[in-house]
Length: 480
View 1 (tube, one colour):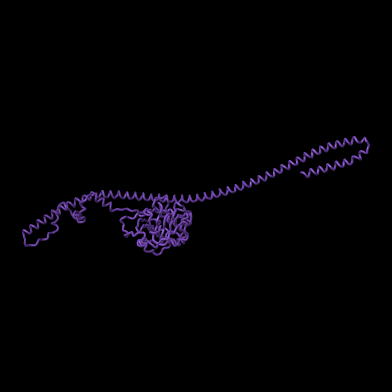
View 2 (view 1 turned 180 degrees about the vertical axis):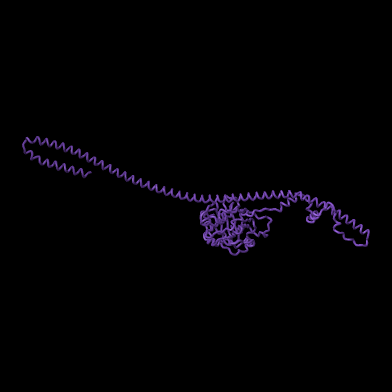
C-alpha cells in the first residue's frame, strides 16, 4: 500500500513540474490568452484535488481490504488449530472408548462363561435333586411295602407263636405220659430193659397235624419266639438298607478301616518343599509342567495341606482349550465353609466335605477316581471319609492342558479370581495315573514312602507366583 501511494505522488509531482515549466512560455503570449489559461489551471487544480480524494479513498479501501484479508487469514489459522486440537481430543476419546469397550467385552465374555458354568451346575444340581427325589420316592415306596409286608406277617407270626405254645404244651404232656409209662414198666418188670417206644406213641392224635409238626421242626424254639410282633417288624426293617448306586455317601463310622494311632505331624519329615500361599492374590499360582502327557482313565491326587482361611480355595485346576474345568478341586469364599467341588469335565462334579481342614493344622488328603463304574474315594488323615460311584463313568481326562495349583482357571493358564484362590500351605503333593490302594495311602499319610509311578510332583513346578514363600523347614511341625 505504501509503494502505491509513493508512485501516485511521484506521478502528480512530475505532472505539476511540467506544467510549471510550461507556464513562462505561455506568459510570453498575448494577455488575452492568460485568462483562459488560469481558468484551465484552476480546473486542473480542481481535478487534481478530486483525483487526490478519489486516490485516497481507493487507497483507504485497499488498506481496509488488506486488513480484512489479514484478519481472515489469522482467523482461518486459528480455526485450523482449534480443529486440529478437537481432532486430537476426539481421537483420544475414541481410543479411551475403544479400550473401555474391549474391557467391557472381555468382562462380558468372562461373565457369560461363568453364567454358563453356573447354569450347568444348577442344571446338574437339579438333575441330582430330581434323581435324589426319585430315589427317596422309591425308598418310601419300598418302606411302605416293607411295612405292609410286616403288617401282613404279624398275624402269621402270632398264629405261629400260638401254635408253638400249643405244641410246647403237648410236648410237656407227652413227656409226662412217657414218664408215667416208664414208671409202670419198671413196676411191672423191674429186671427187664426199658423198651423203645415207637415215635407214633409220642404224638397225641387230634388237634396236632403233620403240618404243625413240620412247622415246629423248621422254627426251633428260641428266646426270641416269645417276643411281640412289633419286635419282629423292627427286625425286618433293620435288615433292609437301600442305597442308590450313583449316590455320594460318607463312609460309615463303624465300617472297617485300618487302625491308626496319630503320631503327631512333627514326625512327618523329608516331604520335599513346603510352599506357602500367604494371601488371596491372583499372582499366587504354581504351574506344573509338562502336565498330562496321555489321557487319564484313573487318577490319584495326594498332598499335605494346611489352610489359614475360613474356607477352602482352589487346590488344583486343569484346563484345556475346549473346557477350562477338565479337572478341578474347586473352592471359593461364597461356598459352604469346608466344602470343595471335585470337578471332572465341567459341569459334572461331586461336592466333598473337608470341614476338618479348617482347624489350621496339617492334614493329609487323597482324592482317587477311576472311570470304571465312575468310582471315587476321599481319604483324610488315612481314613476313608467319603466314597461314591457313577461319577464320569467311562470318561477320559485329555492330555495337553494347563495344570495350575492354588488358582481356578477361566482360560488356559489365566483368568484367575481372588475369591477362588487358595490361602495356606502345601507339601508333598503328587499325582498318579492309577488308583492307590489303602496301604499306599497309609504309607503316604505316615510319611513312610512315596508309592511308585507318580507322574507329577512339586518338583515339576516351572512357574511360581512372586508372593509364594518356601520356608526352610524339614518337618511339618516346624513349617508355617
